[in-house]
Length: 315
Length: 315
Image (cartoon, rainbow over all chains, first blue to last red; front, top):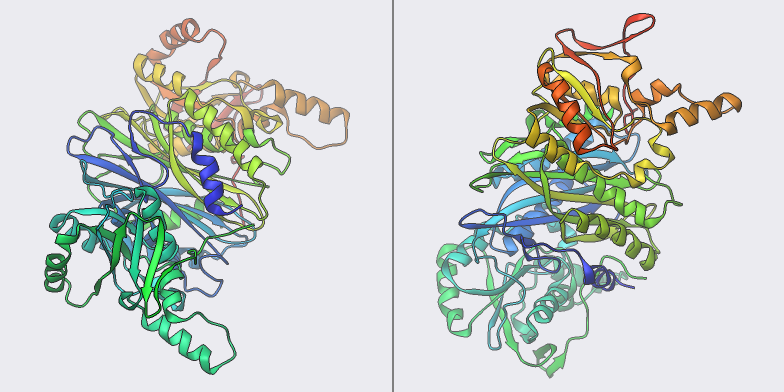
């Protein structure tokens, strides 16, 4: 049973109440708690030693990643983060300076995005460090961008470059909050999420929620330098590695935004983006279709993309 | 360094923002998110296999405890819970039916208190199961009951009976939400928290936050049947056990509410309580003083209480 199968099993019959606008299954839960002009966003995310970072990872980067992942989910709804609680499950003995340095990394990122850290707790996890972050944010009423709004003919866009994140970006990425706000203010975004499981896997989340398919243009997918480097170094050595395109399609933890807009909005969006963010790529990588699944067009023609994105575990 | 020392170190310089009314250091964070008549309560709490439950604990009870602990913290502010996110860090291989049964225990408790479960995540923690719950709730504006409001001369009350929770109550307790609401509607509560670390340890949290001391009457402390049984069984066997009074003072995880009200309110409160909750004890166990620390009066006179409550770890 995979992570996604288990989640599907567990979320079948969760208790609800009238405050819930969007429950399990999107980047954040969306709640109506009675704020006149806003909906509340609610998200948790955990990082685990040996899974999301190693014992050698600099502690400041562990803290940055732990909070940054949650901030990226708020960005994926075009929201604004407000307050976080931090749960630290610590091995023993623990090194207070190491924990302090983790907090230091979180605090720097939190301050940059005006997020208050309002407490949390410490508990024991004897074998490895685990950090769970709970984050509250908000978005204007009916302004949350969901995964379910993609429409046939929509242009599919991705910010930045993809693949090879494990070379370092997964620890240092900047959540795309400013970009998401600008997008939300300047174009009608139909569907959006942040890429944590890999482009192909996360695009499937949009397609499933929207009951659509997609056609990607292989040559347009923005492949990161790290993905190309990993591939070229492996071709001269004996280590196994993915071709760069496959890395861009399936590597996890890029934390870039993937979104769709209606086709007539695509070119004006690209023009406006270049003026606003001249140093950050925005790429149209394909279109939403009525044909189930992901098809990818390359020199050989149109093929069905079978590779799934990274899942956190399977058994 | 103890858990409390570490928390004190980490919470010295947390980033804030104008939404924060109460940050780290109380049962919940209290936020002003712009709801006209309400403040928002925000809390996380985790349970860990081998620390808060054993591999033999029935999964429904694990789920009940995981959510119940957070609900108890909302009760401690006289608040109402609204929505929860559940983080499951799972060993592998995991047994889907076991995880489903944990959710079943949570769902039953959530439905009873009209709490929506709006998602969460699953991740990997290879050696042991860890469940972190993030909970949102609300309380009327300026109605949150903090730890810091105890005043000299206040009567100190506790609901229920204390000690011996590990015999079973720690897995099956009912969070005192109804009782907290009734108290909040019927008496001016000066300070309140839920007893998770033990009466003595948690009373010290109120005293520290309120800059006060306390005098307890040993004979008035409501000792649970389980604490007495554990003591008498150990007197006939070779197992070591605490005297019942010490168990009531220092055993953790009772999840009963401890609160203070002004002295003139004490007798009317007891009378009204008996009518409202005839089957649930409410006991005045002492008074708030200006003398630092906890003193306890018994047949030998007034002594300083040195025992600290249960801490989750120390090194």
